Length: 268
Image (cartoon, rainbow, N blue to C red):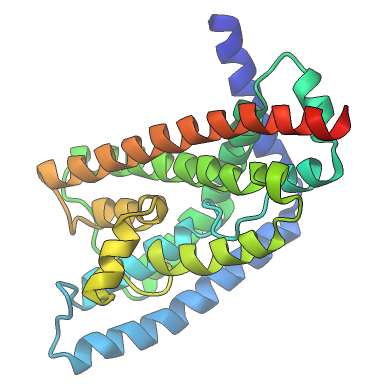
């Protein structure tokens, strides 16, 4: 078990190293995060002001916090639906992965988690710091809030990796997954709370959103870190994230087993 843990850690580190190799892309991502952050800030704080200072429980400061935390997480969670594994499944190279003495699911997800964790340093934290310095944000008032927020962010990255894995392995049956990736991108953006907080959506859309793992990728950690949800309610959001993580891992494992059988039938 200890040896397997070392292998898993090396996969995470490999994801970190891969992400660190593209420094100009990271700088470009930071510039994009900050630029769109200020655009969202102007639009959404104007919405709050037009609503009398509070809209769906968000005042100007809490809305600012939502904006900058969500922008900071954008580089760490995969809301685009595309992974390297999708291409490997399509062209058949995944057959080589199945010959290795390591779970294909674990390798793909841990590698993506490593990339997501690294993105917090050059993109996530600077974006939040710029927002905090220039317009101000609200943060937890206790150490426990920060600790729970950190756990929530880690779970958000993990849920993102295990969910997008499902899109990749669906290629065992669909072969071409670009259409599914586009659907994933459009749906995840709205339901994760990338454009507006999920609480601002119509009631029926909120029900639809909370029936998916997407809020666990962004909305839940933003609510916990902003202090908008605290105490046992915040712990409940983290528990929901853990539930989605276990569910997506279980579905991914089943799809991997079925996909391997499907690949063997196709390839002989």
